[in-house]
Image 1 (spheres, rainbow, N blue to C red):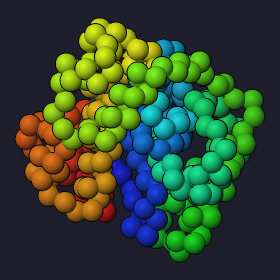
Image 2: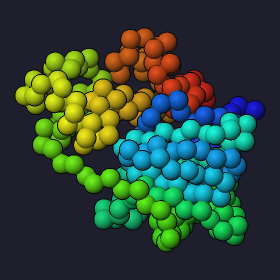
Image 3: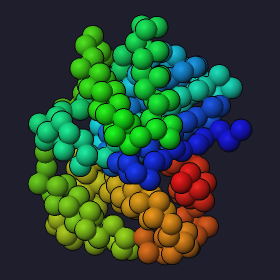
Length: 262
């Protein structure tokens, strides 16, 4: 069995599910364009997020908001089994409203609670009617977002105009070959101060944010059936080999395996 597998429904393109059995979710710290909800079925893992570390294990739910860097490190890969649900922000806002606030959170579920969440995850991977599945997704997320007695891991936001300016620029130019010198000129800072203020604001250096933007767009292009080499070149990677290496480091599977999930 493939250690990491993705499920997508072409009729409901605002969510996908990653299943992992004895597979490392991603080799490097990463983030997602939308919210992520993880369900731990077996084993234990240390999670590093927002300059903190915490343990998740069987019967735990973990929630990550969009663009929050994190890394999971299973303690015993042979015992590790999980499901991750990824949901697009635009759909979340259309359903729950723009006032929805999602925080990094962890909760151990009761056996009944875990059974309910697990059944919902499984149902979302069936060929059932799209209306039923979208309803089930909304009910699942409502249940998760309404959970009480959770451990919430918050980092005090650090607002910095220069960091925000550079972030916005990268979001408009992430496929280009932008040097650190160019970034420093855009915000009129030294390279050192640029990296420092960006890291403080977003928990990652500028080049890492560019990589996350490129990979997020790569996923959309792969889902649309675009040729892998075309995706690689159009997003600023050196070649297909470089793109495939980076994609697997951050996503856990090769671009081809991700594309074939459809």
